[in-house]
Amino acid sequence: MLELTGATYRYAGYARPVLHGVDLRLDDGEIVGLVGPNEAGKSTLCLVASGLAPASIGGDLKGTLTLDGTPAAGLKTHELAARVVVGFQNPNTQRSGIAATVFEEIALGPMNLGLAVEETVARTREAIARLHLESLIERDPQRLSGGQAQLVGIASLLAMRPRHVILDEPTAQLDPAGTRLVGEALRALAEAGTSLLIAEHKTDLLDEVCGRILVIDGGRIVMDGPTATVFDDPRLHDLGVEPPARARLARALADRGVEPAAVTAALAQGLGA
Amino acid sequence: MLPAAALAGVGGRLVRISLLLTLPIAISVVLVSVFTRAGTTVLFTIGPFDATAEGVDFAGQTLVRLFAISTSIGLFGLTTEPRSFILDLERRRLSPRFAFVALATLEAVPAMVERSSVIASAQRARGLDTEGSIRARLRGILPLVGPVILSSLTEVEERSLALEVRAFGRPGRRQLLWRLPDSGRQLLARALMLGGLLAAIALRLAGAFPRLP
Ligand SMILES: Nc1ncnc2c1ncn2[C@@H]1O[C@H](COP(=O)(O)OP(=O)(O)OP(=O)(O)O)[C@@H](O)[C@H]1O
Ligand SMILES: [Mg+2]
Image (cartoon, rainbow over all chains, first blue to last red; front, top):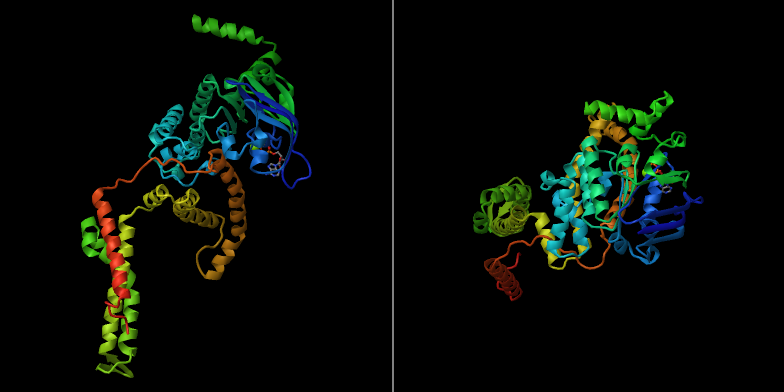
């Protein structure tokens, strides 16, 4: 379990905090979505929840982060890395720049952990299989398309086999097929007991995989609830978050006086006939 | 050096590369030493310059040395893949951080060449002049230098974070995946070469080889 309580965070050299009293709890096997307008503090929350802020980038954090009962405050960055990983939105900065092949790139994390060769290879193969990257393993990581690079970046994190995974816009460069692939991989991870926090503008993906949604605005959590409840909330639109297609369709039908349940029933009947 | 290169199947390329590398220096060495070295035996005279036998001797010795240096460097370059070389050094207790810097530099060079050509085409697309006189080019490039450097600086922080997430800062050695194939005969060859080197140094110190005048 990853738990962040009363987090107020200020970047180094800035007078005002960007996060204000944020509480976040990720249970094992849970996928939580994080949405909010630009500048709301999603990326900052990802950094704080992974312990990199302040451990690595400095700044001032009030509040506590605990990882499976261990306070994160005393951990070094490589100790944090064995427990929680975070992926950033730009796949180019995710690349190590020292690997000649995609396989080596994905293997880099487990290698750094000092694992035995067989274990490193097993974890790397597993991560490759999860994202169906078999056809890319011999390729040069510098010569991938944006979407391929993003998948390789995610696989490099999964090869660490972390207990907690935090992803900041993991599908920004992905086409619908790639997005679906990531969705499936995330669900499989959660089934294996990993907890995940996904910051995304693509609410359709979150609608499919998340059990719970957090809405952040101005550095504060303004909504927190089950996925369907949050995405059907009319306030979402005013917060600059586009609800998933399913919720928009339901709303449009309701506005025209059609009960969504009636549509579902009619569809089921039509398909059955 | 040449039989070794022939054995490695790069003999022809090695000779071509070494000749290309040494030719400019070789020509100037020959001209300067043959005509300007003081000596008693004058072979022939061109204008104010006398070609001396001592000069020819000196030029010959220097050429042989030049060729020996350039063929050994060339043979190393032609037969050694830099990546494997660095990774093998890391296996032999080179600092992982040093290996990282060396590998990152290796990988970055082609990327940088590519990037600069992309930037140049972007400049042309915006109507900036990247061809023509040097001044015109500078004027075209200067407005882009700032943003390019700044954007790569902000990327640096994210890059180092991404490396830390993958436990790069962990003290101790990482487990390398591959081991270069090595054989008893290669080991023997290396030992013989080292022995030869030591013997040559000893002989040189003992004065068994002539010094250059
Ligand atoms: N490294 C930094 N140093 C100082 N301030 C920062 C830094 N990164 C972000 N901020 C500020 O923190 C606030 C929240 O930014 P953040 O990147 O967390 O937003 P976001 O929700 O991820 O936005 P987006 O949807 O555009 O990715 C912004 O006002 C931003 O200017
Ligand atoms: Mg962001």
